[in-house]
Length: 61
Image (cartoon, rainbow, N blue to C red; front, side, top):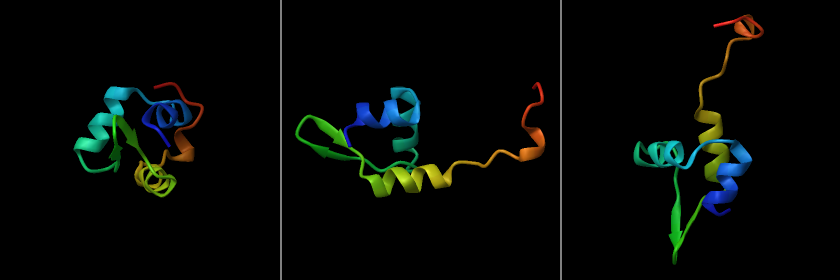
């Protein structure tokens, strides 16, 4: 998927995506002028994110 589709799907900013790419957490490939992220790489990135504890849900920070 194109980067803009990834951003829309996962609700993150372009700068956050580039931070994840530069840290190696998110893999992207260039095809001409487009950055592409495979479904496999998007799923791996998503699985690598921290899981929020259910005991914290619904509580104010």
